[in-house]
Image 1: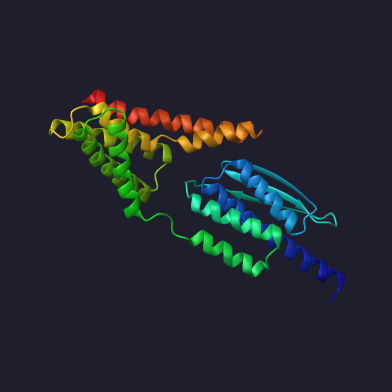
Image 2: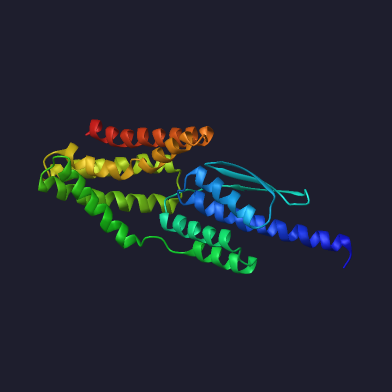
Length: 259
């Protein structure tokens, strides 16, 4: 084997390692992990797979990694993140896999199989999500001072909120627009339920639904990122969270004032 062929094989191997590591970082970010966790995981994995130095830049919509081999060769890859959600089970699985790798690096074929299994893993069943929307809406409405009738109305409007979210998700609309449309649909449902005699206090009914669409996790992650020194990511996340909260308020307010 000539030196040139050997170098080409080594380069291909290192690029493949980095690609697998980027896959893990991407899964973390789209599943709701904070930026500092993504960067720390990628850095540790690169070290475990033989890179001498790793420079990671992560924001909410992109991951850029430059990793240097012991011989000085630098490899750069980037991932554009277009969709983000919350799936903490995948975050936990990637964390567990990264700990295994740091203790004893896996063969790339095995690592690829593990990553594919995590990526294709099904999230929480829609039937269970539906039940949780109904139960949480009912509980929060009663908790914040609503009557049992208000709680029942909130549970019904929570079911409508879930159906609206599923419909908008299927249409692949912008997240901010989805938030406003679903909030408006829920507010309209609450007004109609009260007029039909189901529930007495629209504000107590709506609060059970509003809490389901407030971006609490996103706001918490943005503050954590800024505390960890990731100011750009923190500000981007916070601006998106505040915008989402404003559109939630707009969706409910427009219907309430119109009715």
